[in-house]
Length: 141
Image 1: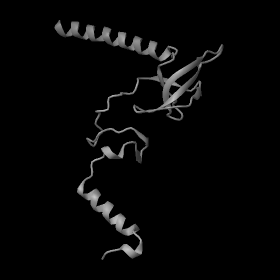
Image 2 (image 1 turned 90 degrees about the vertical axis):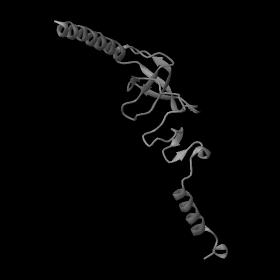
Image 3 (image 1 turned 90 degrees about the horizontal axis):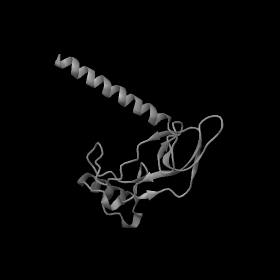
Image 4 (image 1 turned 60 degrees about the vertical axis):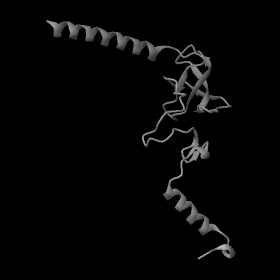
């Protein structure tokens, strides 16, 4: 009897969650919401919504580059968009490797190189590269 009431309660919670999800998928975004283009994976904050008589509204966004790197130009996603949750602005997030999640302009270009911790291996590699690229009159063997 106890299990049946628990299952009934869980089913009603599931139905409510499914209804909330369908509403969220169907609602029209408003300025300030975050959307993502499923084709290009660009995402950002909505700045303008242009309703159309036939079809989905056209969306204009300012691309989101990172918590410390605001976008400065707008981009039209037209009707190719989906609502997403706002990105976490918490700077203390840890990545899978356990390092500080730094805002990046590109995956290979950290925004703040001074925050990167140098390991002994990195220092050795850096010294070897300095010797390799040093002018030939300053090479010490």
